[in-house]
Length: 367
Ligand code: OSB
Ligand code: MG
Image 1 (tube, protein in one colour):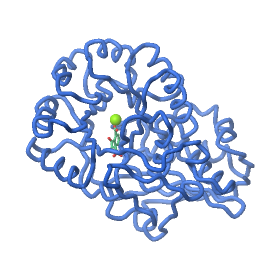
Image 2 (image 1 turned 90 degrees about the vertical axis):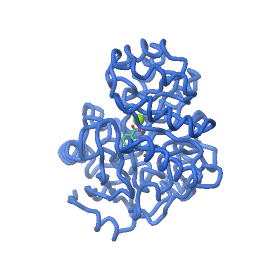
Image 3 (image 1 turned 30 degrees about the horizontal axis):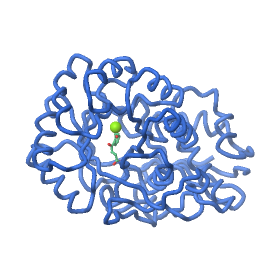
Image 4 (image 1 turned 30 degrees about the vertical axis):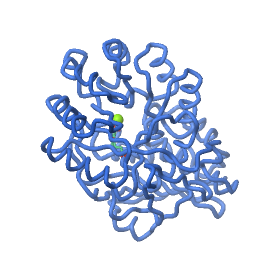
């Protein structure tokens, strides 16, 4: 596939409702849309880095720099065969996995369009629809939290994830558990605790949670191992899972019993597939995390989550949980059984709403 042009578009899209985690509250979601033009085909990718380095060190600013100054020059005016070829050409760029993943997604989209196959087919995924849940941000009071959960349950979500942070943990989660004794419930701390301060969440172990996501720091595999020994509830790693190699080490170390896979965080869909396969062999269930993606990243997540080892519902909610207006013409909706259909069109299976892209654009550059 001979690359003729690549454009970067920095977007800022208003969220339907604000989203608060242990690292802060946002009202808008920034991202970078990557468009690659080759031999009559156009591929799209999404870089999930956000404006601030709260979840990860990458930001839209660092990703823009790495894309413009290093990744795009490495692939410009060259024949890129497939995602593996792309990865080989950028192998000497350390880190910046979200920046890399955005381009890799566009190459997967192009490969699908060229071979007339959906991403799901390219991946070998089977399920026509995937189980999904909803990630609920911190609310001002436990009463507000219950009201928000109630709304999502009425929408049809069958699994709820609650964000927690020190001081807003046991009380909120116990309120939810008491109100909904049978709800599939899990929590995500986004690395807000240390081994010492995590004693405050020991009581979560009695609230019948599916899992506890990333209680400790990203670079703290060993302390997760120590903490897991104190919990009967499975710990699940998100931020700490940065590659297949790290995943293997986390499993060998017994730092977690479940893995959250996000293609953006691990450098792309190819690495996500490798982590899926590795976990499958190790008998570690995985599920697909989310980053408040646009329709582009959401389509990729659905294709990924259709693989067999995705055993827990994904953080892949319907478009109307996030955006009144999206940049894809397609919107994703929730089925009555808390699933979302996997796209069947070629590549990602979505098309771009150019006027929406223009409306949400902060800056653009082309090569
Ligand atoms: O930790 O899973 C996370 C959103 C942005 C950054 C990190 C996380 C999240 C979510 C939202 O939990 C998941 C979604 O619905 O996209
Ligand atoms: Mg998480």
